[in-house]
Image (cartoon, rainbow, N blue to C red; front, side, top):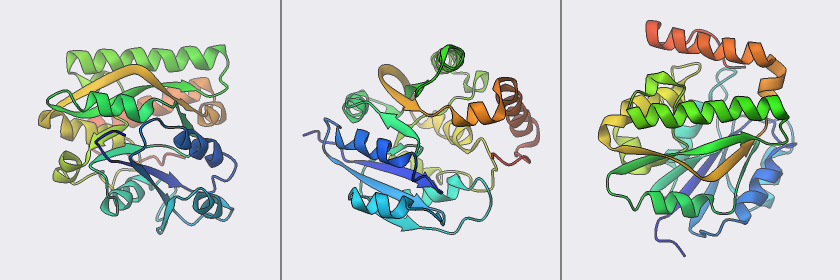
Length: 235
């Protein structure tokens, strides 16, 4: 058993069709010291029922707007018991070594955040190429210390520095994860690792279309960097 306790925080809204695969992947983790906290924003389906069946702690919060994951994640952190955090989407599957790799990374002095390789679950060739390109950009941005070069963010943070900067900015409609990584980067080191992969559904990529997906993220970045806020909802 590893020494570090992880709190895995999953914000949800009507995710009954995706979340069991996520839970099953967490059950297969080799590192056994962790809790799973599901923060549900008023699902109308069986999401909460499924989460409780898998032994997860379920917190119910009010959904104030279409994309309100920042406040949901912050509430999960406030009620967490771990000293390290892992934020997962409900449609994401973690490989069995995920928490073990994170545990190993946090043994390196000064490391406060870890970003994992992300690939599309059931993705086609084009989707795989787009995700691989994003992984390359994230690795490069982190290596040269210019996180503005890509939509860089970590999937895991140590809890203490996360709380010191106030967690996620709940006023942002999008880019809340990028914003957090930028506010935290002066407190320690980030590591990008390809030793483990998070497999996530490309459903949003498909619903927005490939060109639409890229243009939307570019628009978010422009709004964030030039206006200090994002005016378009992440839906």
